[in-house]
Image (cartoon, rainbow, N blue to C red):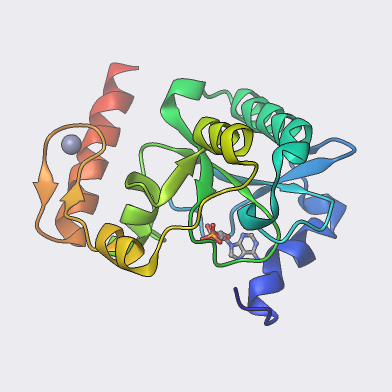
Length: 187
Ligand code: AMP
Ligand code: ZN
């Protein structure tokens, strides 16, 4: 993982308490600066844990606290848990462990590439519950090999709400917007 100043952006944000949407003694929730959906938050621990690959089963109570903060921010924003993904990227790009809390609409101008989509909608995304299982069973998180990462990044653009497979990102984004607007009308 890179250690340049860009990769340290989350740590810089975390150091400024005015950016904390909610927090506890152990962790805080911030807004994702390039949100890939209508709601996209990150939960970061104050402890200097670089990534999921530094976790062991000893971190489970901290992770449970981070998960509680994830549920809290969903509630604070007046949303429901069913409409969210909560988990980690199997191949993180930014320093400091961060738990993604993202709404499943994926309606955002910042969602631009196939890689973005597949990083949340294939096995490149490690659900919180699955990470806990790995820590309980193996005391560490398994790294995906580079061939698997490449294959998953290049998977077809499958809609997360129906059987549609998009030819390209503009078609997928238009389709996701239609799902979003239909849901909004029903509410
Ligand atoms: P990951 O691929 O799991 O490392 O995701 C890093 C996340 O951090 C992405 O969703 C980015 O949009 C987000 N991000 C990048 N820089 C910042 C920043 N300075 N403040 C808040 N979020 C950021
Ligand atoms: Zn669909």
